[in-house]
Length: 160
Ligand code: FES
Image (cartoon, rainbow, N blue to C red):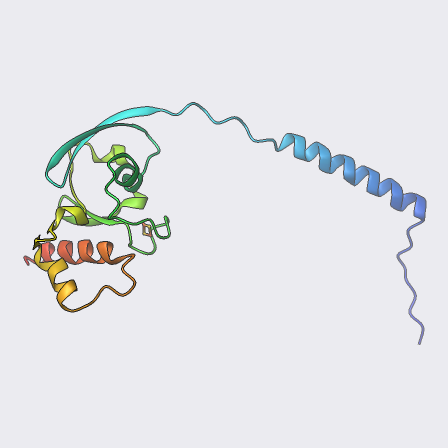
């Protein structure tokens, strides 16, 4: 049994094709050049964080998590996935737990926000972090602040 190839490409045509595809690829890369980003739009936002009124002037694209961590130096809330999947960034807003990485800071004008830093002091812990300590439930500890904030908010919803 003999196999024959119905596809034959003379060397000249192969080279011509390579030149054409190379030229098209280069033209495509020029067309795909990124457009310079527009200047950042800044906005003022005022909210209460852990009982203290805070006012910030932020790029409107700033997430609540970045506002807390980078502008207010409240680094207890952690950035894990930054995609709303891990819960490490959980904070309490108006009594409800939210993923701070999925929420823009400017959406929280006038809101009351509680982070892990707002749940007591080392000498006077809120009952939930105290229970985590007592039961040794920290695991690696990275997402523990989010777990505690979630637990507190869930308790609040259930009257606890
Ligand atoms: Fe993972 Fe926000 S950082 S849910």
